[in-house]
Image (cartoon, rainbow, N blue to C red):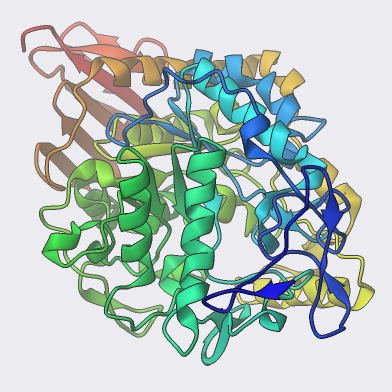
Length: 548
């Protein structure tokens, strides 16, 4: 290769399909950091990809705005028995029938081994070989668009995985000035950082341009450390939106920092949405009674009521778990910019055994959680299988060939859970193939009565949501929440809908609200003329009559 400008090297003559690698100063051959395909895995040779060769059918597709969306998070390896992009296409009719609008795919960038969550990717430009590679992913996105579904990709720009991470041999991609939970941080603001920033921004642009993704979910942005005048997230938002004004960028962050979603001209980073962990934690602790670890900051119906109104509990108030003030007011931020979930890959998979809410709650409580989620003024997200209360867990799994690394992951996982009071011996072995296999959805159970009942509940809720106005007003506006902590009762209302939840041990009788009729009820016989009767652990969803 010959030296070019800006510290780049180049060589001509690599045709599509050719496999190649780089040797630096006579060293071992390494994959291309921008490899488009790693057919033999993250440690094998790279393969030239011609993106122009794929025949797209989505020329009429115009994207899917975040406002009005319902997101469905899925993991390619466990979504279907085959665990491939192609097999996921077969289940798209289920998602259409369910009523979601947007698929969010957990990370697919090449990582070590054949199975994993994807957050330890090392070849960020290469769709995972075991899932079906570049063409398989393009066919999945194309099929989603043909079915009317938007598609988001989970992208990880805060660290790389431990296997196949050779970036430091190519330049100053990492810095020791900052540390993350996974080791050295990306060098976004030090000497030589210009090309590091290009590596990440160009990656985001590639997913939008070459794979037609409608946007990205950005993993744990609170661990992205950058003191540049233009933060890397702002640069990312600016360039992605310039390339595709309709692209959606959603940040995962537990910092409760509204700057993420404020406009750039108002001092923000210009992202389109942000996850709300507070919404999940508030609901989870009220329903389950758990109060260990970060859950200690939640658990009251008062906290739940606050998140139902404004998504965040911690908006500048002290956190007992963190020992400091957390968050800032999100006043003025449009409600749809908050993405909420009753379950997601983190909150299920980062439990000792990866069990779902169905293992802890009764039918009425599961339906109450779904009702509060899917009637919310925020943007709701479901996790694969949640809609039918899937019996399969979602456990943490890896496939590292290095036995020492496998042991370190196994032991580290068990130490982590001791802080939550979970027995180390109960934690499944992440390296065992059985841990991965147990996490695959069982599609046959949909036809079992209890699962079919929950699936019908979700379908009806989503049909109701489609009939309601899309909320784009500022957070906290246009909603009414009433909480009775002693009797464990909740009233949530926004335009067109009223949800009444009884989590207590006594029946709740109240006058039927004027202008409303019962649309869904978790128990039979709940509406008695002008009286609404909610048994313990039940929910009723009321819809406003036309014109009211």
